Image 1 (cartoon, rainbow, N blue to C red):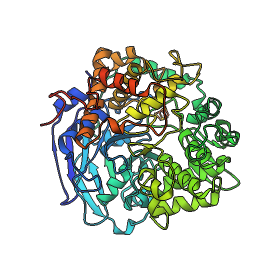
Image 2 (image 1 turned 45 degrees about the vertical axis):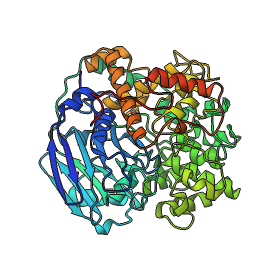
Image 3 (image 1 turned 135 degrees about the horizontal axis):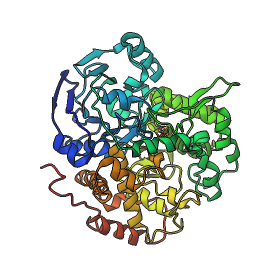
Image 4 (image 1 turned 60 degrees about the horizontal axis):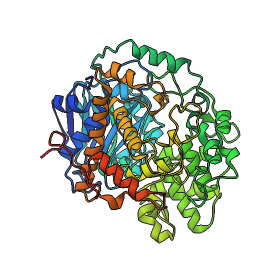
Length: 555
Ligand code: SF4
């Protein structure tokens, strides 16, 4: 089975030391990416850890495909205990850092401890250096990238950094790479901020070579020649369809379709797109560099999730306003989904939907924990009581944009996800929309009979994250192509994905998570019976407790 190579580099920023040791057995078992990082987290992070304490870790990993030239591989993984969900999360970012990371020759890089002052950690294939940077306190993401470019000659593709939000441990702060790409969900930027690490850079010329079969060229050719609408509109191509089937959360989840959808649709985004945007090696190029000539706002995106969070969910019907919010979140290092949803909660409390000036002010206040921003920086689950609004989260993570009340298998998947209400964990929504390219579409009504299919999708997504393969390879990366690329039968590969899900669950069970956390703020038909079926098929107890095998779980 194809897997990553290269040692684990453990960096203790408390005393400025680094050491490496081989992790071959872990790599052979878990391939790379989220799998290797989850296993390492399980072995090294204490179950009872405070996410913002020095004992938490950030574990960066790529997969075995990140040294190739195949499309859909310009992504990498970061894993740690989330200050937002309080469980283990793996976050996935695109951009160009997967290649500069792979060039260090390490298979995984783990940050632990906490520095005395703000620090940049420089990792190369020959050494690890620690640079005190108190002058970068409160620096934005572009300012931090500019400093590193000027003083070290490293472009933003070498950099993972935080902005003011991460420094202030905003619970949904992102780690930004390639300046505009985010390890967004779960607040790992706050973990980096608690470690007083402003940035980590990767550089070298020790990337392992990987010889992929001819099928990798087939994938690349298909990515290049595809006429998929995502190439023009990215994920916003689904906005109007979601609205039509009442799956577009609106005005803090109080409605599910938005009268102003036309102003924030994929067509409006495409009008603002001024050049192609992509990730390393990817000919699909679905990214969205956008610019508005009238206001001078320039950003990358917004993606569909941001269109929901800062658009319909905030009652905003002008794509330029959503672009402004997107740009501010990237600048300050904030997850756009959680930031927009949390602001929507505040707008609901104050009955000020559509107040774009207030939204801009709130993003600033959250990033700097000023005024009410200090409360909102805690996220919806911790702030909703004081705000006097409903808690629209699962496990502390606020909902993504594909509404589970309309796409009800996706609703069940939000409940079962170890990461909380995250659409990328199973991407079950993709099978419930009436899309022409969904060969195996599923009736979106109800949850009965969907548990097995959700498990299959969760396992497939976990396998992608081990690879690391982009979600949008859907339709191109068939099981047969996985078998060819990874040199193993698909059932063995899918079993790796299943092991990763179970390991995450086991870690979270040790932190007190159980069935009572797999809940939704709304009712779905047959929900309890479907949850029972899900646990049974996973081999977990009716209380949602995983039984990870001895080969997976550290003593
Ligand atoms: S499909 Fe889009 S998000 Fe995925 S790697 Fe390619 S450009 Fe990046």
